Amino acid sequence: MTAGSRLLYLSLETPRQGQATYTHVHEIIRGLRKIGWSVDLLATSQGGASSGSSYLARLMDYIRVQWQAARRLKHYDAVFMRAHFAAMPLSAWAKLRGVPVFQEINGLPADILVTYRWLRWIGPLIRWLYRSQMKLAAHVFVVTEGLRSWALTEAGHDRVSVVTNGADTELFTPEGPRPAEPERYIAFVGGLTAWHGIATMIAATHDASWPEGITLVIIGDGVERERLKDAAAHPRIRWLGRRPPAEVASYLRGAIAALSVTEDSAGHLNTGVAPLKLFEAMASGVPVIVTDLPFQGEVVREYETGIVIPMASPGALARAATEFAAAPEAAARCGANGRVYVKHFASWERRAEEIDERMGRLTKNHNQILR
Image (cartoon, rainbow, N blue to C red; front, side, top):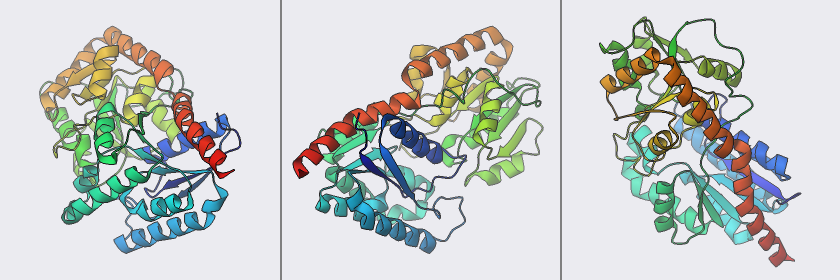
């Protein structure tokens, strides 16, 4: 614990309420403040594929936020960064000023190139920027063991720890309000991106194996929204767009099952995935249907919290949905197992403590050197 230490949290990825980035950033900040850190957040306001902002506006936003951070750097004991290729200027400046930087890695650089395909021509530069920032970091936090192996190689040092994602166990609970309708449904909560399996979900509702009378409720927004604008006319699909956290929690706890059917079509997820949607669904006592990717597939199998299916398989998804719809007792057992797992291993409070354990020790050493 490092009571009274001052931390600057930088996020060049704009945290918007209703998106995973917002939840992760604010939950970690809240947890660190509870422990005793004084944390200030500096974040962009123009970023994101769904923002509608021009690329010039986003670039100017990156510059503005980092300029503000550089000017205020002397007031902080450390900087915590949500990894971003454009954060190199502040990473280098903090290194020059002797302020330790802690990098948080949630995915490979290739993730960006899947969403923004036009950036592929500067892919080598983006990878170099990530690698260089990891080399400069006092410590690197990653969300899966696969990412840890990758980061160890890229960073060239062993200052890398796994601190995976989590859930708010007070908000996401089995008890509480539930939506009045639809009466029976399966839920997906997350960004509408290509690798989240939106097309597979839609196709699954057309499969002959999809359970009769079960609606697919989709909560979220993103670049794949056009698919849902067309599909929303189908009586088995209801797209709700973004919803506030309390409403998301109500839809999750009322679901027959929740989906995390991420797809690795571009070969960028072999290091594993640990999505918030997985933890929030399990915290809600809901069984999960997940694709067979490292970490999420392993957790679901080991703790028996749901069904693991192949990637990009509408038929397998439809059959898993039918299995839970037809066996409520088995679904309830899986849901209860998930709730126990999150409460014991994946609350945001536990995540903040894990970060503080590393960050506090290194910051304390840094301050002693300055004295």
